[in-house]
Length: 574
Image (cartoon, rainbow, N blue to C red):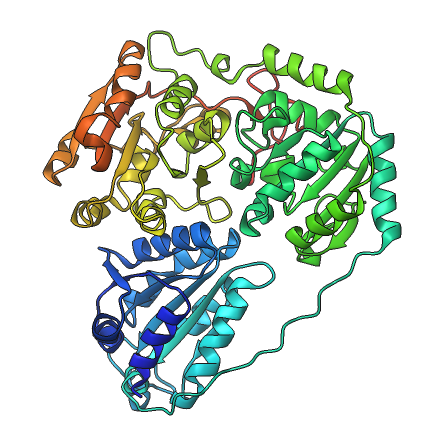
């Protein structure tokens, strides 16, 4: 069997329905095989980075590895940002790159390149993949692909890269009956540890559950909610877990971190017991002052031991898959009773009433971004996924989206890659059989992968694109206000954006622009009205250029001290 035919058949057998690519000479065999012998939909993008982001979203949505293909040289290197996004956000993906023929590779020669576009993509990608393979022998293909799927999906999910020379792709191999790989042993938690957790919860006065991406990537949100309801403990979430518990659930407190909801950050800071589920406790979640957290009981559950007691010290480590932990713990406490801490819940409610997200900004007669996001949520119950790009609009979305039980939230967090949301919306919508999705994106981010509007139109995807246009790079501009005496080089000075309404029309997308608060309700209804429901549409929302993102942790201070009322005592390093 031809190697490229084997790969195509294998992907189909694994349940892959879509692959994302930009054609090039070194992947033509793979593309032809996918087209000729499978029912897999080949989604042609206009940039390899966009293909990687689409695969990223597909992996987040399905739990299967997202698949992206690229040719050798620049095609392969263009994937790297998307590969990094998958790696840092724990997304299963397999990136397949074409390589020059084996006889055209430089090998040990003391030269830079032998074959045209020859590039050592394996070495480049190795630091941001769980594994990277260069296939030198066609007979290794079956075991490499079986290993790649296993590596990408087991433990902490992540990307794998497979680089395949063109002559290997067209080689003939014998098809194996099966490839059996031995799975890792399951870690068993002891009863004494469970008893310790239960005792500490029952003794706590101000407990919280902190949820990270690990719960969502384990597809364990139902177990999380079951546990929270059993324990009667409020839930706070990181950026990548704002969809882990529905907005309207009585135990949901809010989003924490550098730009978290003020009431949630204060509750996090005032807690005396924290059950950390699949969160890294990184600097954007805790702030720079980690000593602040080391005076309370913290149980940290994560599948990677290196993430525990990394920044926040004194945590009790439980190295385990979050889903397995939740299942085991729920079974262990099935007959136990836990009491509601009414004083604690009333205190959190009072904090929320005192510091509502819609009152953090003074915008005069302009559109309040947080109020807009609430209104967008209320009219977008049919959206399957909300996708936010990176910047001020990302934080407004995380602060204020009213995500329902059936909805998801995707963003690039660890990599923080501008240009993520538009191409990711393609992977997200296709993963859910072309259900509608909503993209929330800034004017700066929109210009990084704007070419994918054509991919959305060509594939007739019902993507609702909301461009929050503040005519500058707002988050960095705010940084310049804090540390550079409002010198706006390259964020406001020397920066421009087009009229995205006109750009959308050029691509054949219905669009409109709003500037005033009184226009918001009608515009968000318009996204879903009539024929617009099943079509891509674009709404440009003009935001005052000097609108900040508040609250924001005053860098160097504890998580409870937030701008604009507290001032930073150090310059941010992240």
